[in-house]
Image 1: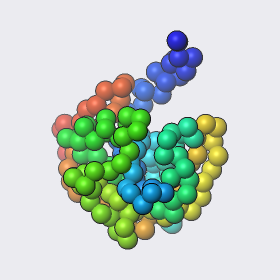
Image 2: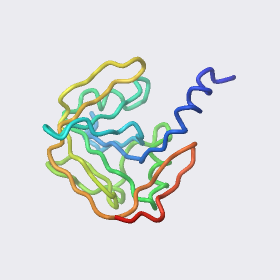
Image 3: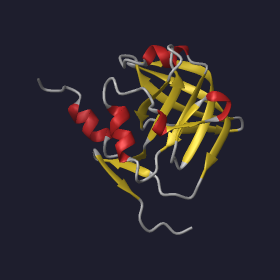
Length: 161
């Protein structure tokens, strides 16, 4: 079957992004994660971020009911984490991936940045919901992030500050 959205997806794939794993405590009390490249900052004052979740994903209800979410920006060497959480029904966060964030929000170990967010708004947007979060705590380090463009992973090489 031909994907009628393939040309649009191809065009969207030309925009390079970082890769995040967004996590929450699921309805069953266990940490869940999903690969997301729709993460972006919204505001510095107050500090707000957003990301989008497909209404058809199997863990939609978990995020729809959550009060908080965590965002882990993946490091260049964490492609395996991105592919793991991008697969259907691969959303439970195993202990070896877990680094408890602030106030119980799950974050992934080895991340280059992490954000603990309280959901302040949910916006219906077509086949997705936009989850806007107030950043309550965050961290970052100087490691190189994992990048994604044209359906391929990569990393920055020659960044000078």
